[in-house]
Length: 446
Image (tube, rainbow, N blue to C red):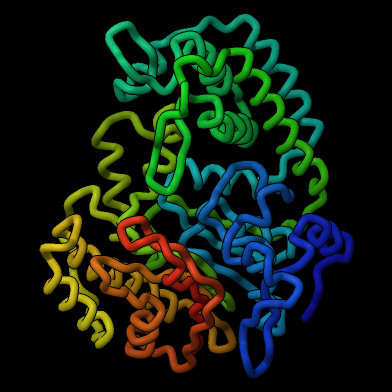
């Protein structure tokens, strides 16, 4: 494999987890390394939260940079182009850029799409220092204006007629100053950098926290509300953290990264450049609306301006949740495993916590079938597709995601198909919470 310049590779290795969770055997495929038996797997971002660029924004659902580098190594050559249809926080995009590999990534969440753009846009340290100085001056004489936050849902800003709120009035006033000053920044790349830095601290400066069930209020939040001074402190720390990474990698390779904001089911159709590697992790069919995780950032930063905007975004996501009603279609190709699971779900309809779950499951696999169809078109003869997926279970019915995807992939035309289990996942409390669900790597090639 042709390596990028040594200094970039060495710097990357310094920031990647010391013990990668996988090695790739020529015959056995992806195997867990002995050194990483007790370490978080590379298919999660748990071991990469403090490394360069990953630390810009807490993103639990991401895989680690070491997963991307291992995926590249399995090819045996440096790919000419890599595609990630579910960009997330941009792990694939920034890792490929630092390795000198052109990449295309698609992300439906507009805030996360901007996070990826900010990470992969090389801004000089000198420009950022000057911008930071100008920003501080602007902040000191900019008047607060709560009208900038009028579009927010009622629960966001404190008022006398509310029992709960995400931001106190004092904090919201200071936030409005930040938003005003960011909008005044003339350089689009610098403005994006500031907006992402602000977005990264909003939840930790709020009265809520995010967990696997969505947004929850902090314990004793009324007594521990964030102050304007806390926003100043956290923003400065976040800016310095991101600046440090930009400065360290200022001489990064000039590999192009095309960030597409949109629905991967549609946007993949518009890509013409073939790829040697397609790597991604779609949302799991666990009935969780992933847009809820970023609700605070999306509204506070102005990506959402109305309930209709929120609905449009939700409808642009894959059928992994039942929070909104939408018609779901079954895959065009046959999957025996899916058909059996669907019938079992129908037979246990009275036990399901939502009657739309069977239809959601069908829609989920139709969505991924569309992604696989376009991926088959885009994948070169020498390339491969790698996706990280997880099982789900409803009313005791297992949704064997890897097997269903293999059956669909074979019907589409992928001739080499394999599944490698990488870890056990804990099910929801409704299913007892035991570790009986799998997370797997599905590997496909033509």
